[in-house]
Every structure is written in C-alpha cells, then in structure tokens.
Image (tube, rainbow, N blue to C red; front, side):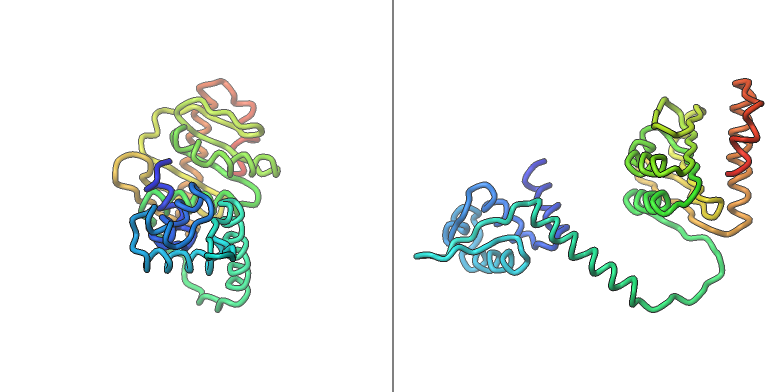
Length: 245
C-alpha cells in the first residue's frame, strides 16, 4: 500500500490529510519536534505544529517532555482499536436513544454504488437468523467469505448459486451458468436484494421486504435449484433442499 493509500485509510479514522501525513512521518522516523516534522514533510512549521496538536488531541500521538517537546506516534493497531472502541460505544448510545422511526409501508429501496451494495449484503448476512440464499458470481461470493463462513459456523443454513467452484464448510453450493453482473440475496424469507453489481461502473440494486416481491424471488430461486437438481438426478433431495427458502 503506497503513501497516498495509507493517508486515505488514516483519514477514515478521523485524521485530516496533514495530520495523516505527519503521523506517517512520525511512524517512519520516530519521535520528532514540530520543526523536524515540518522539515521532513515539507509542511509549514505552523501547520506541522497544528497537525501534531491534532494528533495528540485525537489519540494518535503522545508527547515526550524534555528540552524540546517531542511527539511520537501511537502504534497503528492501538490507535485504530481505540477509535473502533469509541465508535462502538457511540453506536450503542445512538441505538439506545435514537427516536423510533415512523412506520412506513413496505416499499422498494434503491441502493447504488459498489461499496453501499456490498455493505448492505454484509449487513443482511450478519443479521440473518436462519437461512441465507445467495446468487452471484464466484468472484463476488468471495467478497463475503468471512460473513458466509461465520453464518455457517453458527448453524445458519447457507445456499449458494454461482458460476464457478467455491467451497465453504457447511454450505450448499450449486453450479449455474455465468451470473454476469446479476446478484440476488434472500434472507430468512423476509427480505431480498437484487440487481447489478460487480462489473463496470453501473452498480444498482433493489432492496425490499415487500411480501409479493419476496415471494416472486423465492419462487424463481426455488425453480432454479429444482432445475439444477433435475439435471443432476437429485430429485430425492428436492423437498428437503428447497422447501424452506
């Protein structure tokens, strides 16, 4: 990972670009004064001191008193874990005290952007209770490997329809034709996400818990599994496999 990428990742943890630049400088060179940090980074002295003060305030640097004040970087793992711990506490408080949303009729939500779609899929997998059915290319499946393995390990039923060999312990996999950019996820017979994901610039999916939409998607996936079983001569397992989608 190059310096620009490291800087971008550090900014995700609340650092400004200049603070991230100075933090990387401290990490590489050890404890430094503001003058030394300015000289090493090419940032003006006033901005370097401002960045160092920001790092100390945000828990990314400690000060060492002496003839001159030295700043040393907090280890990345410690800094990141502290931030994550703090965010988890804020999440707990928000979840506890946030006003209850007004109940809305079930509809269809459009989710755009590869990251937002991937985040939604991961949330669906993590919050599922009983059953997960996934229909997508093997390359996309591997993006959710950790969530799939966790669900299977915890005893949730996971069934995958995909175009190339994948193997997860405790997961049923059916080989199908090329899925192209189409994905489909159904969880606990209660919600569905389907649409375009994984190729090119167009990433858009529909998400819904609307009963009729869920039923149509269930029937489509059930029929696809049934056809695969017919072709493989696995009729004797049909009911057990597909009746509880």
